[in-house]
Structure formats: structure tokens, C-alpha cells
Picture 1 (tube, rainbow, N blue to C red):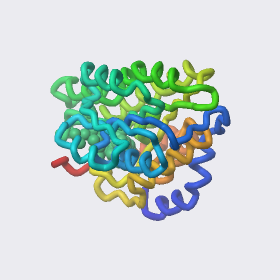
Picture 2 (cartoon, protein in one colour):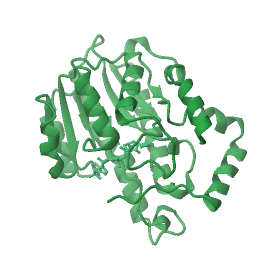
Picture 3 (cartoon, rainbow, N blue to C red):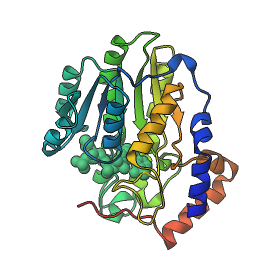
Length: 290
Ligand SMILES: NC(=O)c1ccc[n+]([C@@H]2O[C@H](COP(=O)([O-])OP(=O)(O)OC[C@H]3O[C@@H](n4cnc5c(N)ncnc54)[C@H](OP(=O)(O)O)[C@@H]3O)[C@@H](O)[C@H]2O)c1
């Protein structure tokens, strides 16, 4: 996306975020008084969620990180923060978190693995084996699903028709089409998108909102090199919380893939051709993580 498209997208943002899909007035979710758990909350978008949960009056925030070295820093943020070690792929960690967070009303599945820093390992043909692709599936689809299975009964126990709980699954534009530079990531995010839709259908008549958040263009280490964006993790979290406050379950934050579904539907072959040509001529890259 060039700078002009980015700015045009931002100008339209307020209405587009809200109108991606009709809101369900019976599933409005209030942050004030919520008890939330955020995966991967030590940096980036996850940390933005923690900051905005606290600013908007959440009662308690389970701020989780897979690396315990971040827990003291998270605990120091506020008395309402309960820091927890949680590698989302670790079943013992997941179960311990569910034991601890019996008062939960909102799960934010944010943690994700973008794939190996070796380009070839992120593709089905050039990978030496499927281990790294399976790691993406495990981190980005199966682990959020396991967490949803553990926490949805707890969230329902703590809710009522007037007090709606929530699961927010942080997806990506890469769920809507195959980004060949990150095939493993796209595969896992597309699977997570369908998993989220399945959960939404199963819980349709229950007091819980299951949201698909099509994130993109947020200033974190995962942002593609050269991308232009104005969204901070805090901006992103505020947009997402504004949307769930109205009962939206399909959310396109303004710097993300707004209109991408329509563009793909209008010309699926042309869209894929442009993506493949870019892959061969000017592939998307993210900077190596330190
Ligand atoms: N930034 C964007 O523009 C953008 C675009 C599309 C989608 N997204 C989505 O937004 C979410 C957050 O991404 P981000 O941009 O904030 O990336 P980030 O800065 O790289 O943060 C990713 C977080 O996930 C954690 N994580 C990775 N594997 C984990 C595991 N097995 N268990 C627990 N935590 C784990 C990381 O922990 P460590 O610090 O220990 O590595 C880190 O806290 C992801 O779901 C991503 O796909 C972001």
C-alpha cells in the first residue's frame, strides 16, 4: 500500500471500522470492570492492549509473556496487573493460567510467530521439512484454540446477558490471501480465521462476543520494512475496544487491510497475480528480531 492509499484509508477509518459487519447490540462488550488476559503482552500490540485495558478501567489484567524476564516490568505497570508466564504452545502453562484466572471475562489471543528468519523455511516447497510451518500452526492457530477451549467456559460462568464476555483473536490481512513471503504465517492465520468463525457460530446464542480482528500496519517489530503507518499499538487497541463496545465481531482497524476482502472478491485472479509478481520482484520483508 502506498502512502496515499494509507492516508485515504485512515481518513475513512472511523466509519469503516464500525461498518465492516453489522453490530450485534446484544453483544456489546464493556472494558470498564473487565478481567482480561492478553497473550504476548510484553511488547508490541499486546502491550498496547494492556495499557488501554488499564486506561479504560479494567478490573484486572493478566499480562502474560513467554519469557519470565518481562514479568517484573509488567507487574510494575499497575496494581491491577497480574503477570503470568505463558508460552501459548505449552499445555502446562495454559492450564496453570486457567487455574489462576478463574475470574476472566475477556481473552485476547494476540501472541504470534511470524515464521523462521530463514526465508525458505516459511514455504512448503523450499523448506527442509515442515517443522517451522507446524510451529506457525501451533502458535497461531492450535494454541489460541486451546486457550479458547479452556477460557470460554470460565468467561461464560462469569457473564450474564447483561454482562457480555469476549474472545478477541488477532488475525491479519495475511489471513485473507496467501502472502508468499510468509506462506506459513498466512496458512496459520487463515486457519485461525476459520477457527474463530467456528467459535463464533458455536457461541452465537451465548453472552460472549468472539471477534476476528484483521490487524495490519501497526508500529511493532513485525511491521514490514518500508511500510508507512500512523497506528501505534495504543491506537490499535482503542479502535478494537471501540468496535467491541458496539458489538462488532469482524473488525478491520484503520491501518489494516480495510477493503481488502472487497478487492479480492472483485478480481481474485488479478489480486493474486499482483501479489505473486511482487513476491518475485520486491518481496515483503520484516527486520530480523534481535
Ligand atoms: N504489527 C502489525 O502491523 C501486524 C499486522 C498483522 C497482524 N499482526 C498480529 O498482531 C499480533 C501481535 O503482533 P506484533 O506486531 O505486536 O508482534 P511482536 O511485537 O513480534 O509481538 C509478538 C508477541 O508474541 C509473543 N509470542 C510469540 N510466540 C509466543 C509464544 N509461543 N507464547 C507466548 N508469546 C509468544 C512475543 O513474545 P517474545 O517477545 O518473547 O518474542 C511477543 O510478545 C500478532 O498476532 C500478529 O500476527 C500484527
